[in-house]
Length: 256
Length: 357
Image 1 (cartoon, rainbow over the protein chains, first blue to last red):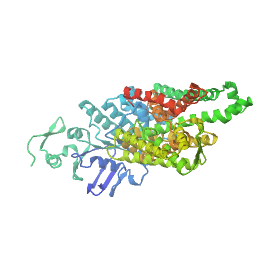
Image 2 (image 1 turned 90 degrees about the horizontal axis):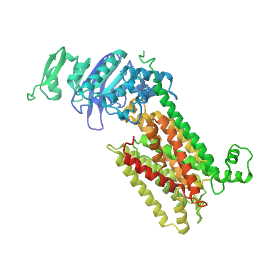
Image 3 (image 1 turned 30 degrees about the vertical axis):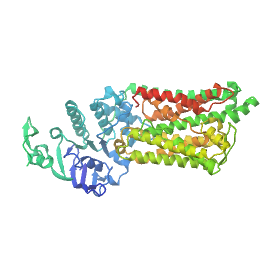
Image 4 (image 1 turned 135 degrees about the vertical axis):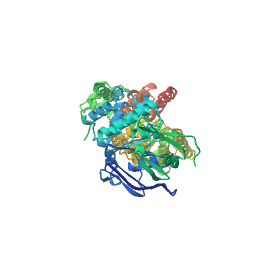
């Protein structure tokens, strides 16, 4: 297994548990969507997998090695993280992506580092923007830069916190398509938190619903049911199939 | 197993990096030229060839030699070091506090340091005061004076870090806290002045002007060690600062221990500020303006901003000091007056222009 999350319990001081006995496994080339309403602990889970938050109990293993026993630098060489909020200073795309080589870098930037950045820019179709300052970019372009940055970390696991939250439809499709292609090509394991169920079901291999800090349901996209959505979000939906895709449509009926 | 080998490095990028390197080198050369000019120009003019002979250790005219060794060189080096140190501290603070208005002066560190040093001189007896304008205060115990300045600077830093860590501490809140802390320490200095006798009062007023002329070789040596080590520390952290610029969370995911980098950065910035303020008084604006001038020209990459801003600080203070000595010669204006004359309009211009980063 590429990523194994086991019995995670996270609590913020005194206010009960945010995540309770949460676990899943993920193989190489697989993408998992973490779904659930606002404030259910999706981002907390990602931070926990990345070692930024120490859980009360439980373990996170990447290729069999425990994340909580690793130094920050070692974690950064195994897990790439694309945060929801990214600040852009006056820095070129090339330099912003080069920052992702930091966990591997010695005192000087090596030729190898530069070549890897060049390759990542090529893979994400950012070559023509290499010298553009990132503070003059659109949301979609900046998101690609952040993915490229995580990619040059050469991680085994990619974590993305709502990668499409501030993008228009075209960019949403493009970014998720890019993530899917990159994950398959590099045989990574990817975990993303998402709000848009239809986008998630279209691009991921598996989904996982969190309710009240616990795994409520999980499965392949075609295994989603109207009952799951009603229980997690309190919204009545119909599950339709269109062109081989599963589509979730709210039907306007009152929730029971 | 990596699919990222054999990528193409754009030619334009290589050229772009070279341009930045040339910019930094150009500033270094400008700094050296200004250093020679600062030593050459003054009430007594010393020919450049004599300056160069003396600096390179060769035999030079005896009178020039004495002026250079005992007055001009320590004076110029003090300007160079103070400019470098303040600009480096400002650059680091802007990044680690994620605030474009960060600098020792705007966040009240300078005023705190001045209070600490004044407190040491007046109440702990670490210096003696005279009623002459040159060398109004002679510091007998640089260790204790600097320590007192450092303690005051550090206390201010800790309050600022604490405020920065509070949820929702916006840049505005932090700058306003700096203003409040600065006023608090200015009031503290005034309080000391109120109880001072005539000689002490005059001495303290002259002293807080901020002047590089009062530095002797001992002060220069102290500053040199602190500024060189501090700058080396900041440069070693250049990638950490770049990562923090991208957001705390991104920085953490890249293996940066953000809290630690922030805390140590503030300690080093406080130490540099404390030592400069203790020896030279309050010199404002250098730490705020220099990083911004450089950011506008070469962008926010700390690999280049840190050395370039430091050199700009050195250049600015050397030039200001030389002008300050020549403007009303044989009278010498305190350099802080000139940096404020230069700095305040530049600061306003930057504010009006908007786009900080």
